[in-house]
Length: 241
Ligand SMILES: *Cc1c(COP(=O)(O)O)cnc(C)c1O
Image 1 (spheres, helix red, strand yellow):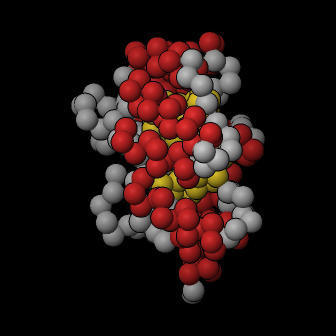
Image 2 (cartoon, helix red, strand yellow):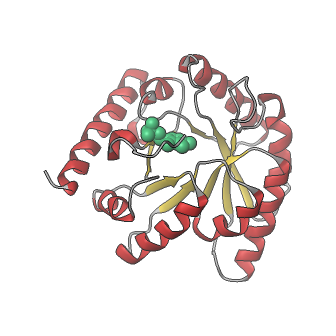
């Protein structure tokens, strides 16, 4: 099997899993977006996925992504796909990330919000991007600090700061189920946090949750976007969160 056939078959399997999860949860397939996580894989793999109809891609390291998105654009100049940043982001990478990302899903502090707001305004003024930056609040569902994510009790105040920042658009919440934890409990918690957030911010309805290993459970608990890497592209040789 060549790479194109291999990826086509994996995509069919993932599509079947997502469709089955939606059916089991009594949800429409159109309520759940499939985001392809291409970290550690080459731009050529993203191009094959785009040929197969995928329109949303994600990376978790800014430095790797900036080159890859450029390569992808050269390979498929008319593809019109959207790129999401889903990994922990240092403030000093804000200027660079807003040149390629349509969405940053890993926003977890007021300092990062300020840096992204400023960088987006500058990039718009310089013609380096043409639309506001969409952001999700990454919620830390892990008791142990250091793995990134805004503590659940601070989500509302961070949301207020984002909605007051020009050129940022709050779209919802994102989480990674803690290692070793029960994903059902995590996705339930996230769903409750999302519901609370939408009372004040009805435009922030995205719930980005579920990966290759737990997408069924995420869809059952209200995820509107699953982020799938391994199940589409295979195992990663480099250790990456
Ligand atoms: C790598 C990664 C994924 C995809 O994980 P898989 O288990 O390979 O599907 C999803 N979300 C984030 C934040 C990631 O870093």
